[in-house]
Length: 81
Image (cartoon, rainbow, N blue to C red; front, side, top):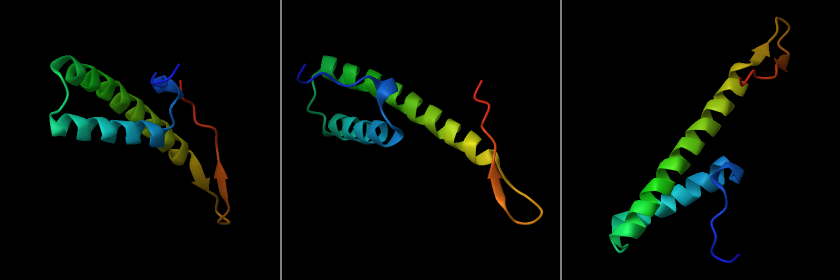
């Protein structure tokens, strides 16, 4: 379906952030109708939450990286639950 936005949960961090930035620019321009602005704000809030979740997941993964006494780097799977 043309024009249908992808599901937020299917977006990468970079895709979600780019869409969020685009929505912010659109809202700042003030050209949207009231309903359009409300829809953009709602989607923007969901995109922000998605980006924060992705950042938290990445931080948890980085936090699991360990350096042994001999200087070698190892990773452990992050427990995301």
